[in-house]
Each structure stands twice: as C-alpha cells, then as structure tokens.
Length: 317
Image 1 (cartoon, rainbow, N blue to C red):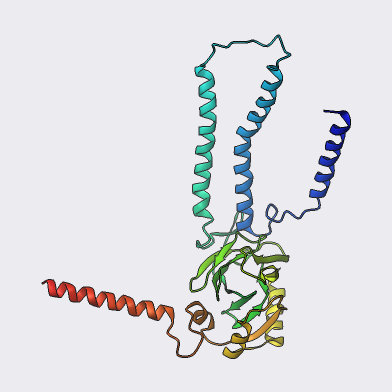
Image 2: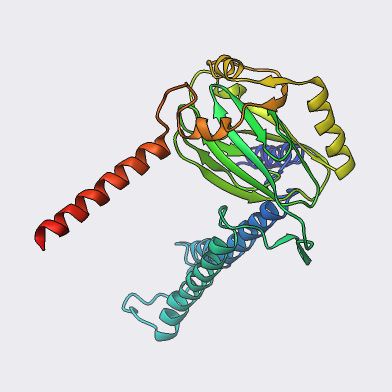
C-alpha cells in the first residue's frame, strides 16, 4: 500500500471522527433514570464482548505478521494439533463472558420491565412517600400523537410534559396501525397497537425539551409523527397545565372524530376538557354511539363459554 493511500485513509478517519463529535448521542447520555440504566447495560455488554473481540483481532494481526512467508525464523510445526492449556483458554474465556452476559441480561430484563412500577426516581433516590405516578394515556393516530392527562382532565396533540422526579405511568394504544412510542432521553421504545394496551413506567430527572417520535413505520405521514417532551419543574408544569386549560377547547366526540382522520404534520393542540371515558372507548373501539365495546364483547363470550361448560358438566352428571 502506497504512502499516499495510507495518508488519505488516515485523513478520512480523522474527518469521520470529527464529524461524529457533532452527533447528539442522546441514547448514551439520557436524562431519565430508566434510559440511563439501559445505557449502562449497553456499555457493560459492549465491554464484556470487547474482552474477547479485541484480543482475537489483535492476535489475528499478530499471527499474520509473525508467521508470514518471509519470516524464516518462525517456528514451523506441521504435525502440531493439540494443546490442553490453549483449549482451556479458548473455551473458558468465552464461556465466562456468556455466563456474565446471561446473568446481567436476566437481572436487567426484570429490573427494566416497562410494565414494572418504578422503585426509585434516580440512583440512590427512592420514590418519596405519598408520591403517586403521573398517568398519561397515549394514543397513536394517523399521523399524530394524542396525550390524555386523566388526573387533570386535559388532552394535548403532539406535545408532552411531565414534572421532574415524578414517576410517569404511560398507558399506550393506537387507533389503527401499529406504531412505536419512543422518547430516547426518557426510556426505551414500546409498541402502540389498536385494540390493545401496552404500558411504560419512566421518570425524567433533568429539565429540558426532548424529542419523541414513532420508531415503527406506519405509512405516508410517518415522518411527521414527532413531538416534543418537556421535562419541567413542578412550578413550570403547573403553568403549562394552566396554559392548556386556558387556551384549549373541549374534546368532544365530534372533535375527536375529526382529529382521528388521517392528517400529516399536525400542530400542537390543547384541549381543556375531555369527553368522559374517551380513552377507554378508543382502546375498546367503541367511540361511535351504540357500538359494542371489545371488553364487553369478550366478557359476553367468556360468560357464554362458562355457561356452556356448566351445562356440559350438568349433563354429564
């Protein structure tokens, strides 16, 4: 390889490194405790794997250089085929790494289960006594996000806010196709599916404005399914809530039906009141008057099946 070619490659690597320094690696420097624990898991898993990867790569180059054809001083043993010590090193090291990764994954899978309520708000900071989670009901629509705050009877399109150091309990569903609710600074992504409810528990520890979006392609308006998540002090959150109450309109059934129509790049909208039970009706697909809700349908089927089972047992006796 010529000197000029080596120089070009070196300059390319330097330029690429400089370019990467401008990237915002929010996944690796998050502002929420759950996302921070997930980032730590990525770091430790990478370190454990590099314990094997780096020596293997280094030895590959070493052996290629040491036993090159022009090196007549290298020992040549064409009949050598076994070394107990070498076999132990080759198999024991990867086995130890696999055991460590498995144990770490098993523990973190349970600790970071999105359905599991939080046991702390930050490292070394348990949840203060008497603090209840802030419930946020999330609806993925075509192609926008609708957030309900049942505690305050308000709703917001394409904007989300939460006070610092207060646990958040997200309940997530969708109107039609599947999406993925994701705020990298807060926690991992979780799917939003029509007729189903998923959950996510998280907390924000630092003030700021963070990006949220759908991480699952859902059609023509997918690129516009973005919103801002505001981490606020308690006072700022109260002011934001008052702003929603002051500037919003009522969320009635006709307004919701209009909002549910497919649209792209929707602006932020506020709703000062919400039709009672609207999220539950969206989840159970019975927003239209007279429509049988899914939960009532399943309850009816369950009761019918139980009745048939009882009748069969009675007949058998």
